[in-house]
Image 1 (cartoon, one colour):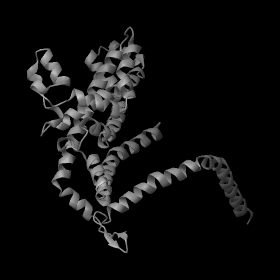
Image 2 (image 1 turned 90 degrees about the horizontal axis):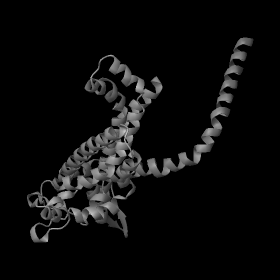
Image 3 (image 1 turned 180 degrees about the vertical axis):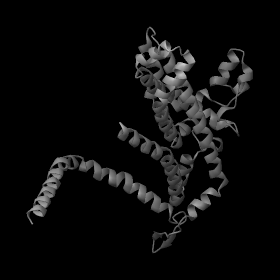
Length: 315
């Protein structure tokens, strides 16, 4: 009879000791947990709930707007709307070009600066400077640079091409009916390439010199060195860059509105559609668009978080 009591006392002691060990930590972060629960997950839940209601054209009941549950009807109407499908097409094109452009330029700059170079701190500052500028401020400048006027009405880049004798490079830029969204990707790439450069540069300098020397001693060529040693070491950095740039492209709004200064069909993306729906009091449609974007971001981010958790556990 004494043994079960001892076991129960030991378990009780462990439980109390465990509470004492993590209790203060939970108490310390409890304000943040409450705020995140209310203003992040609570608002996400409210947005999803609103997307399942019919508040686009609410009926008036005694002067109060009434809404009713319609399930996935808003999402069905959304994907039957050719304008929204155009916005999704623009989003895919913008994301692919934005992602590839920042990765390629960021990697090339990091590769150049990774080697000993006099004054590399100055070059790093120059490459990183665009990131310090807000999308609104840079968008105002790029609006002038990407002015679609040609001929006598040319300004910005088109005027520059005329002055240097490359008039054949004049373009309608953001007003192009088919590829106007590509012009929006140009300032986005300019602004974020320096950040990706910093990520890759940190990855380069985190690779021990011993690994490179060992590869050279074993007779590996420079390409084999990069293929078998350096690129695998940079894979986590590249994955982080893809996640960061991917989710930033999905919620792009301020840059597009700053460059176009109006609701141009050529450069519409879901975030702009959501804004337009809100201005027209189509709250369920706006909430549905927001939910779609949330699901796309979740598809990108959740696998990364799972992978990162497994890597941390294996360490």
